[in-house]
Image 1 (tube, rainbow, N blue to C red):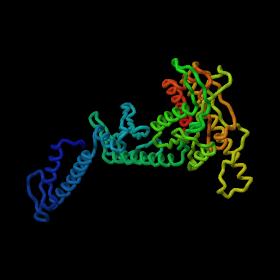
Image 2: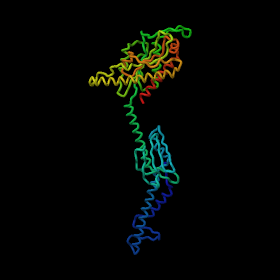
Image 3: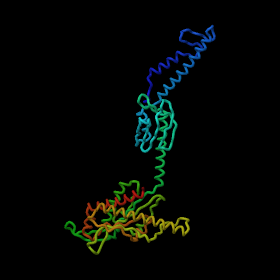
Image 4: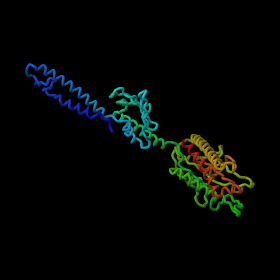
Amino acid sequence: MKTTVKSIKIFSLLRLLQNFSCEPKVRCNNNLRFKGKTGLLDGFSKACYKTNRVLQQALFSLLFFSFYSLSALTLDDTLNALSPISPNVSAQFRWDPLMQDGVFNMGDNYGVFSAATVEGETGFLLINNSEVFNTPLPYNNNGSLFFPEAFVETLKTAFTQVFENAAANTIASDETRFRVTTIIIDAGHGGRDPGAISKHSINSKNTEITEKDIVLKTALSLRDLLRQTYPEKKILMTRDTDIYYTLEQRADMANAVNVKDNEAVIFISIHANWGANANARGYEVWHITSSHRRTLLSSDHNYSPDITAILNAMLEEEYTTESIILADSILRGLNQELGSSVPSRGRKANDWFVVRNSRMPAVLVELGFVSNRQDAVLMTSGEGLQKLTRALYNGIKNFIDIFEQ
C-alpha cells in the first residue's frame, strides 16, 4: 500500500484553488469585486489578479508535491515489491541511522543508498559495487523511511537484471564446464567364465565362492546407488546378468560412448582376487602404468602425425592422472567404510586389458580374496556387500565432486 498525506490537506488545497479563478474577474481580501479594465480601480484589479496567479502557481506546486508524496512506498511494501524477482531469495534491508545509509540485499546482491536530506532529492543507488543509478532517494518522514516509486522501480529493475544475467551465466557455464556424464561399471567375468573360485565352510555349510557372482551383485547395487544420486548421468553396465563378454567387447562398449569436449566417461571394472596363500587378503585398486601409451585419438581428424602424437601423449597423461585420482578416491572410500578390519593393499599399476584399451580414466578394483575365508565371508554376506558397495560409491562420488568443481 502506498503512503498518503492526510486527505484533509489535499482537499484544503483543492478548495483554495477553486477560490482563485483564472478569469479576469478576481476576488480580493477587501471583498470588493473588480472587473477587468473598468473604472478607476482597474490598476488595482490587475495587481490583485497577478497576485492571485502567483498564489495559484504556489498552490499547484504544493499540490504536486503532495501527490508526489502519494507515490512513495513503505519499507514493507518495498520489500514485497522486490519479492517476485526470485522466489528462492527473500529481500532484506539494513539501515544505519547514524550515517543515514541503507542497504537492500537479495542473496549475494545488494543495493546501497544514502537517504535524502529533503523529500524529492535525487542521488545515487549503487548496485553490487559496479552499477550506479541516479534516482529519487528514500527520505525520512517523522521517523519512518519512505521509498519513492521511481527508486523502487529502479532497484527492482536492477536486481531483476542481475538475476537474469546470473541465470544466463549458469546455463552457459553448464554447457561448457567439465563434468562426468557417463559412468561405466564392468562386472568382471560372467557366463561360462566364473573367474576366481574357492570353497569355504560358512555358517557350517560348505560354500563355493564364485567371483562372477560377487562382482555382479556389487555392480548392480552400485548402479542403483549412482542412479539415485545422478539421475542426469548415464550409469551403464557391461553386463547386468550372468552373461559372458570378451574383454574386447567390454572395452568397445566403453569406447562407443559419445561425449562432448567438456564431458568425460569413467570406467570401473570390479573383480575379486585369488591367491595360492590362503592368508592373503585385502582390497586393492589398479590403474594403467604411466609408461603405457594408448591410441586415444580417433583417425577422423586432419592433424599431422607429429601433432597427433603430441596430442595423444597429452591426453594419455591426463587420463593416467585422472585414473590415479579415481583409484586413490576409491581406496579412501574402502578404508573409511571397512576401517582396520580389512587390510588395504594400496594403489597399483598394471596394463590390464580393459584398462589399457579404454579411452578414458579407468580403474580395476579387487574387492578381496575369494581364497581367504575372512574376505569370502565379507563378500558373500549382505552386510559385507553393502559396505563394499558404499565404499565404491563414495569413492566415485568424491572423484566426481573434485572433477566437476
